[in-house]
Image 1 (cartoon, one colour):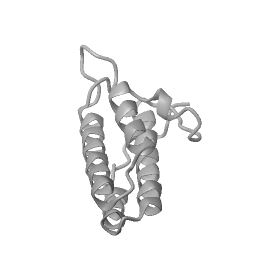
Image 2: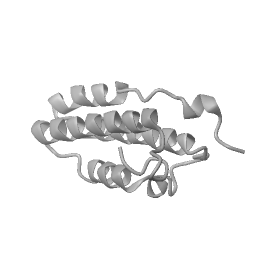
Image 3: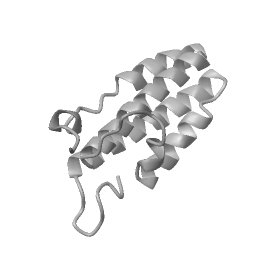
Image 4: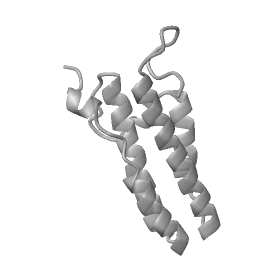
Length: 119
């Protein structure tokens, strides 16, 4: 059974990255990390749904995404930073990843490539 259209068409919102930006300004590592984790999780589910696959939980979900997404998401989550400047840079990178993901979801698969091979 493919992922439902409602999930597949879900809007990729920047709400979590905006909230993370507020935490970054305060140097709140925990807040930023949790917001980014949630934001990446939403993007992962959207990518899976776009390929008409279910994403039941986080186990192995990132590994099953396209390399252009997986590598950037892993870098964001692995080292968000420890001071306001580093956290802000990570939040900016997360916003760019969200925008690229949204663009890839709008473009769908390119004829000479598989689904979502490039943003």
